[in-house]
Length: 140
Length: 140
Length: 140
Length: 140
Image 1 (cartoon, rainbow over the protein chains, first blue to last red):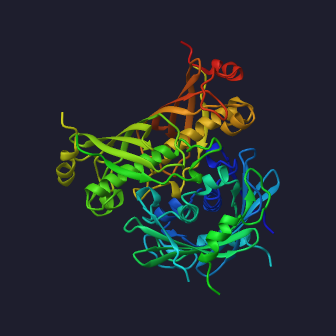
Image 2: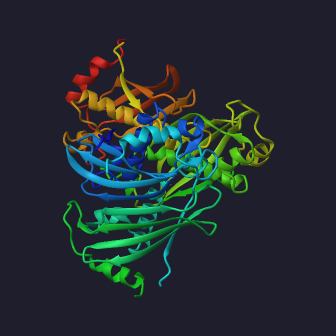
Image 3: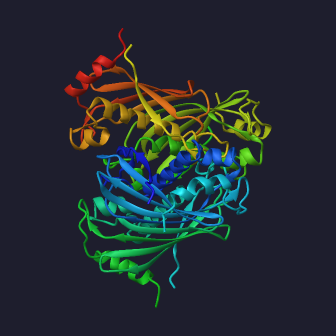
């Protein structure tokens, strides 16, 4: 199993609600930031912005699911591990797990489809994505 | 089937990304705002804030899943329909659907557990919640 | 002095920090939402999104200043009063005041310049803006 | 003049609006994140969260002003330079400047007051703050 991409989030005061833990709606936002970081790591520094504007494709989300396992606080950095799980003909599935000080805080799964930039038309997985992501998929 | 609670969101410029549609991470945040609005409607104006600070209980999220069906833009208000789906002994499940101009934009499901405020200890569903929410559950 | 445009904000749990009051960074975001609402009121429902995409001009911010007078909580709606203060040859200045239950929570001032959409080139105030906003300026 | 604390922000797709630049309301949020980072650097890893919960004081904002000099995009990291400017008897003033690839994007000034945690009562500057911040003030 290849090592995941690890994305560090600085959780802070303003991310927390009066229960003194991160407000739930911040957590999907952090998982998305981590997936964008995965693309930067895989595509020579290019995240969704450069993907859409320079490379001519986009990857909108069609599905997400998240399980919240433990509260998140500013007492530790939040480490989000991103693993591509499956590469279809025109879609990609990610697993994202968030941990603080070794404790699993959330597990999640996201499905994105590939489109031509500036449209909502599905397209096949771009060659560079297939080349770079295939080695990162689970072995079986 | 009882009528759902409808929560209106004003989608605006700053909610959109360079693809000119709402950025994905805003959508779970809106669904949560709609669930908070449901509580305000059901509990005499009290949302999560008063629930926790005045009524002594909280309802943290343990699970969410969302399917994104159509892009969301500022051209119409986003109407989020919130329906309690199931009331367990110490949990509640919501369905939230978002529509713009009659078009289904997202479908989603959220599970929350009841806790004693200021702790993470599960507790049974508060009586007032059971009394107010039971009539809103699906008939079957 | 013409009546201001009033924009209502539903402050909620997730907007508050562990001090149980709205996190400061949400407040400029609400003032901006109120200014966008002012444009919708003045331009037949068109906010920044339609301004840029349909009407061909934009109004980026060049300056803001805010004084925070009282904490904001979810116990009352936040009413933001927006008043255009000055219309220059290619700029507009707004005053935005936020109140909860009659208490002044913040006072602020924002300056925007008019540009041609899709560029950063300054342009003169569009005719429709001058026609609609001039009657709303302070009398002096 | 002591070197400022530098806080790095990863600007991304979701921070940008349809004009393809960072939405204005994100910029004060980043400046605040940078100030929180300054406190972490100065107080042995403690930001506002630990300040309030562990050290018994808070620093709410009473004033901010920002000048936006150049658009911010995801093409470069945003480096926010934080400098304490003045330490009063119960207040602190910060200058925060944001730069991308050497270009000044914003200049800003923030004033916070010291309070006893859990109240809104002003208090004098805590000793540890005075000891750690005084050497970082401008020389004159």
